[in-house]
Length: 295
Image (cartoon, rainbow, N blue to C red; front, side, top):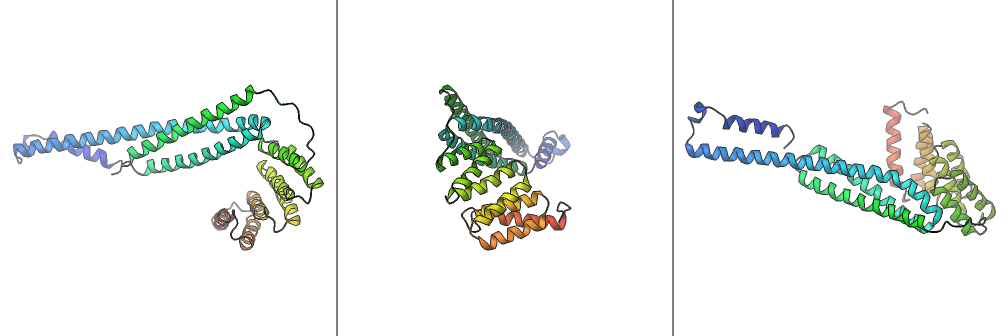
């Protein structure tokens, strides 16, 4: 039953109930009583559906407010926690992943709410549970921040010397939004420990920091350096995918298509392969139906 059907039924019911004697002349007393009961039941049903819909909308509004507030809190929390403890930072990253999943669930609920009113009660329950989950996560993030702030401020650490120290310091800098510092540390790791397994990852994350800063040209350059040293390495699929995304952002769709097609040919079972296929389909369609692409 859609939104237009309910008002129509209600109007019809009112017309039947308030009809004059001329209409009731064709019905018996028992039929008239039964008709009034059916109309009353219909009114109650419509009223209940409207209440459930309003309750769902209210719950949805509350959940979206919680989500917006929590997403605004996470970057600040990450900066505080990672500077004090990598352990706290790992816990925060797990919470952030949960928030992203909850956001997807909330978007699905909004879609369901817009397409159907009959499932109002079920949708209301879903949204209420989502709002409760977001509220619990917000409390947990706030508690973590308070716990770190009560700890003594750590003394400045000496310059990292071992590969493990340099790697950890570079990752903390990257995750707290200090891209330039992260790139400096990754470059030091590559220069001093070029044969270590972390070196390939350092090339990739250098490119990632450029991409995160919307510096797509330097992201492409960094991936080129990575693939020159490690063309079939562990991070090669991710590097190629990042390069394709960078070219797409630069509106060079033809180059992005070529890189994606090569990526899927060389690494058909890579973790990024499904997302790469989706992007490839999207870029190909844009080339034919949009003026987005330059070449």
